[in-house]
Amino acid sequence: MILAALDEAVAAGARLERACSILGLSIRTVQRWRAQGGGEDRRHGPNSTPHNKLTQAEEDAIVEVVKSTKYADLSPRQLVPLLACDGVYLASEPTFYRIMHRRCLICHRQRSRPPVARPRALTATGPGQVLSWDITYLRSTVRGSFYYLYVIVDVWSRMIVGAEVHEVECGKIAGALIQSACINYDESSMPMWLHSDNGAPMRSAHLLATLRNLGISPSFSRPRTSNDNPYSEALFRTLKYRPSYPSRPFASLEAARAWVERFVRWYNEEHRHSAINYVTPRERHEGRHIEVLAQRKQVYEAARARHPERWSGPTRNCDPIDVVCLNPERAANQVSKKSA
Image 1: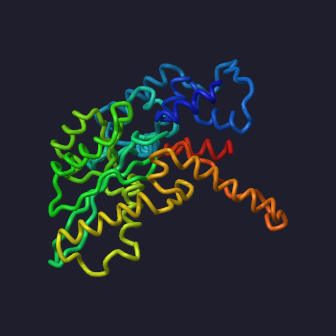
Image 2 (image 1 turned 30 degrees about the horizontal axis):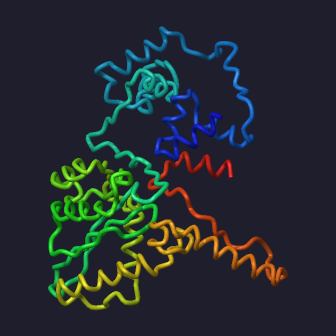
Image 3 (image 1 turned 180 degrees about the vertical axis):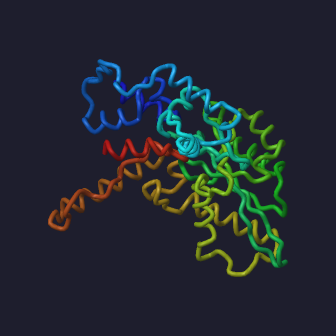
């Protein structure tokens, strides 16, 4: 029951580590339970106090040293050897860290910026729940000058729901494009999240105000981390590696817009996307992919029945992909691999 509740929480977008902490579990415990195939909770807790546990007075002495003016700027890895040089040993480095974590004394000590946390994991179980957008350059005939392609893609269906080419990067243009893209969704299926990188148009006040008015929550990648926005980046690679993509710069803004219009039509209507089991984004977005995959499975099964000797295993997987996750939690991936 606990494992099922954790799976439901993660599928809804919760962090596995946070969900485990609320239940009083560690991730290692969940991994062990999955490896054992479930069963009863066999935890009994410690029956005796560890013989090496520090006394309250010893912990207070460590906290006093850590908070002192002389050692406040030092990490435990520097502090413990320094105390040893003075003939003092209070505890090991891991013990220092454990006590400092418990007393909320751990903080970023360097003058550089602290590391940016990974973006929140976003889970989509249907169209219109999570959108991803970005801007890419299209070369013009003027050296150093570009046209800017704005593209919004539905993460679950991979369908391009908005694409425009302009001569400038601007948050107002992005806000207008997002508004026009949301017209295609009714109130019951209005997008909940919009993910992007950290560019100036993505962080503009006009765009954020537009999202707030639409009831959409923004999500951002870490700085200089393109892997945090994989669906838009993969779409741009497909776009620029198309055989029809011009080898020469676009002669005009109208030429760029005409080519992008043809590409969007091909991508949504004809392109068999590998990540969604080789159906078109339009078929998946409109729910027709289930029928397409079922018919495809019948063809494979009939071919196998005619010549079973030619098949060494099952036919190709034609099951619909129900859940798509953007920036999944690493711990969740590890647990799923161990339980597979």
